[in-house]
Image (cartoon, rainbow, N blue to C red; front, side, top):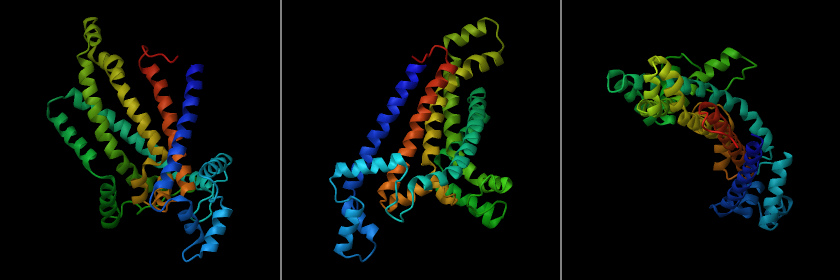
Length: 318
């Protein structure tokens, strides 16, 4: 286990370094990117050449590209990364957005895991019959409906037409627990719908594959009840791919991947902040949010490996 942790820590550092280099270089080749364009945005509309040159010098944008990268990463590490757009601290903005993003993703994750597993098991138990076909249709709808469209429809029918839920925005859990809950119900449903459909279909197929495995026939031959076979053997093996999907999906979402949901409901989380600053080519903000997202994806990928060892004793972490 110690070797596994050390290896994963080194992988995390290497991945973050590679992503930071790629992000920095992409910024310079994008139309409107580069140090000169950044200096113009910082100086403001109508700034003269002298002002732009002064800004380039003050921000170190006239330095060689490798020096600019080194300075940017130094500011990232020590927490002094400053936005080119409004001069705000990027790390502070990310920290302010984490509660909204975490509340959205954790609540939605509970929904998509519970209902995804339940629907997947039911579909497998009634394979080829009406419940399976009905759940398959619902899963297809959940996968097919665009997130922004589903969110807009929920807002229109359950907020505008029938005012059952608040129109949007985020309320802190510590300020108003009930307001926190009611503001997040529709975002939770919107974000979870896609994953519920996908997870239920994947789990259904995994269970049907496991039911035909040799070790399942052996367990039945030993006289184990069908319930015991399903819970202790079939479901445990079928959940391994689900654990992989959940780890990667949850890491990506908590890292800001729920951009559309946050934007539709104006939650002001990390994803919405990243989307807004990407549209303005704000390199410090783009770098900060990208590394933040990459950290969580790598972290949850490592946690998936640990979960593998628990679900399948044949897997060992060296």
